[in-house]
Length: 176
Picture 1 (cartoon, rainbow, N blue to C red):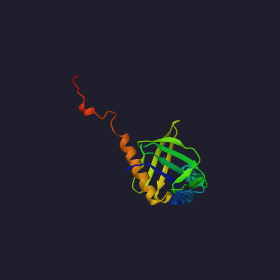
Picture 2 (tube, rainbow, N blue to C red):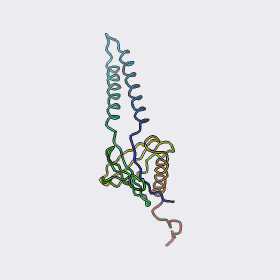
Picture 3 (tube, rainbow, N blue to C red):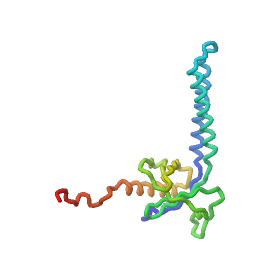
């Protein structure tokens, strides 16, 4: 069985809704804290907390609007991951109905602190230049079969990354 796969990753609607719900919670908290401020005393801590909550809610909404890229993840049989940032119309299907993109991607490495759950993947990827990219992948980001194949491939890569450098460690003599 090969772990090689190529999948198209769309932005997650579930993640976007949850982020917007968190922004709403922050705005409600800001309004509740603002109501606690006594008009005559004007406690600075309450005003600051209210402004910080409102500002954080606005940042969350703006972050949802900027993360609308469609990605392509290519994983080879040897565990090499290529990440391609594409537009919505950059994908085409070849004769075998596999996703094909004309844009070149960059090779990334899966970091050890990535989270690999059966319902969600939080992939921390390092580019060749050292930049760390965090991808949150949920079931609605791709087809169920594609999600399973990416999950299995990432678990295999993570297992390969945790092996000791020397496979013959126990066979070596410590008394030489």
